[in-house]
Image (cartoon, rainbow, N blue to C red; front, top):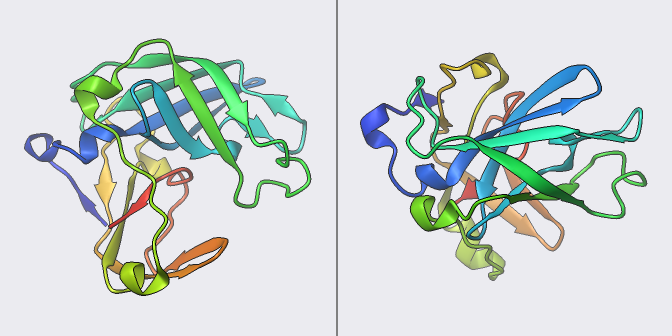
Length: 174
């Protein structure tokens, strides 16, 4: 994975951000990405503790953060929407939608969600972009994977891209 410099923070990287949550007395760090003017898609385990059933009390989203450069600000999450199956699947493939108090997506842009034929997706290289857990301080740096091929199945996306801790909730994009 390579670090992106401040000058490289353009779309789509501005739509990807660091998620910081507080569940109980612990802080968690992950990645999320804008899917609308004030909606962020992330992994449920970034905001939900499967061992205790606790939902994060405080969650913040910082889009485009890199090396302390914070072009759009940090935004409080006002509402956390979890899939109802999160407990049954014990965190495997579960999603959360975070609703921000401000419509920052008009400034950052947002990523679309796509349903496509397998042959169309497997012919394109995919990237995973996010915030590895080793970059969870104020100098967090967005990281970009080298392109990897993807294999799409009806309920699963498989890629050979590395998935470092902290990249939970990161988009796999083509």
